[in-house]
Amino acid sequence: MSAFAPRLSPGFATLDPVYLWRNAPAMTTAIALKDITLYPVIEQQGSFFDVMEFFPTLTKEVLEEKRSWLEPTFIDPASGRLVLCVQSFVIKTPRHNILIDSCVGNR
Image (cartoon, rainbow, N blue to C red; front, side, top):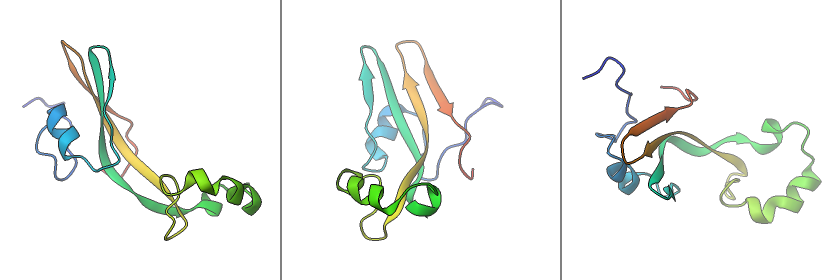
């Protein structure tokens, strides 16, 4: 194994994009662009922060105006907290499999 082998998220035993796509959390969607496919690889996803604390200049009035399209994808209706996703991506081309890790997260 290469010294540069990527670290895998818990529960992912392989970097095979098809395996990752089929076994990833429900909010992931592969994007196909001709013969290139982008697969998100979720490390963590959840409602981690209070919306008003995360966006300190946001007003309650603006939040209420936008709430109809923010919930449930971007704001958890049960907790009112901002939903965030820490993820990497696998890009599959005819010649290469490329892992893009933004180095955001705790691993």
